[in-house]
Image (tube, rainbow over the protein chains, first blue to last red):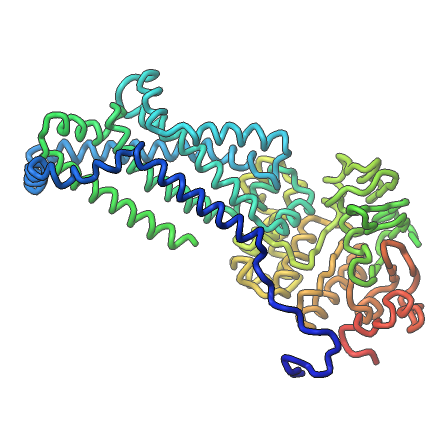
Length: 273
Length: 264
């Protein structure tokens, strides 16, 4: 059946298209105006007026750039082995984070855990996420001493908070039909999760974990700067010794390694989804 | 109604309120062992709610009681601890099949064994050989055994629904509750699923309670029909007693919409 868009026979008038209300306009103006004001009053605080130094200190930059262009590969074996250590820190940090993140993620999902479990677990998750891994690393350097273990623990705790949040959001968006299907067979709650929930979230969870491994291999580099092991520690030493040629070699190794991990993990994630 | 054995389900004074709306309003009904019962009624009349209450998928209002094979599963507005045993005896079939899409059809059918296996075996999926053979036999019986290794979400609706019936068979269910089992299927698959339910009822003596939107299916395949309207039972009797006058009372003047095939 085809009807004309405007039927002459229709008794009621065609309603007007929706109009944005004055209140909505005002709210938009307030939000964007507020952002603009915040940016303006922050100009002083961030020393934006000094941006010209980038060019007035050109002599300094020239020397620096010249050294960077002549990477010194004498110690390349040390750099590669330290880079490998960094990746191992990321690997173990991420693994421990998954181990902690799975139960937390399930306990923080409103559709499977009662609210008296969800609320405290979410507090814990937020606390873990809100402490930057650099700060966490400083704490663990004090607790377990300088070295890679401090880096592993810092990454594990921070990432556990992040993964738990992502995991729980994945669980909250599942289709409840299959879970009911499992429940209706007389299965206990744990089996409902194992067979009804986990198969649904598995690809997403794996993808999140791989993504965090990617970003953790970057974080682990930075963690070296505070003495938590890996390539970052060497980078920091050479930087302090004004040995920019070695810094250049190290940076190249870091960029190549992190890019390779990114590409590998992205290829794996694409296959999953 | 209940002829010999203990009743599949006994529902006493059951109401279910969602906000201000009463989905069930003082329903009392009993379904005996080996009966083939259709629950009909317009959308929102409470037929799915009744079925889901029996298997304890949501709690009913305080005051009502539901008993399944002699076990009290709902009382004082709570689902009791006996519900898991009752669920094990009831095979539940859903409109959307509710198979786990990323698991193979075989694994889905295997899940029917969860209720009776030791918890650790069920958790890790270490199915005993006898149960695995039972699952294949069930798949063979419903006619989809060649799809056993395929992921459930790659199968057609009719194949998935038959898989769901196989899962109920692996449960060793003594009765089947089917919630709109054919509403998402094409007519050919729908007929196959209905004939399968009839066969399980006639040959294996399983009690069957099936909610149907299609009155002609209820009349053709079921002996007893219970009609709900606004949460109340308005008809409970033999399928043959449903004449046009009755149907107009249940569905209103548009009752012909409730037929799948054109009314003869």
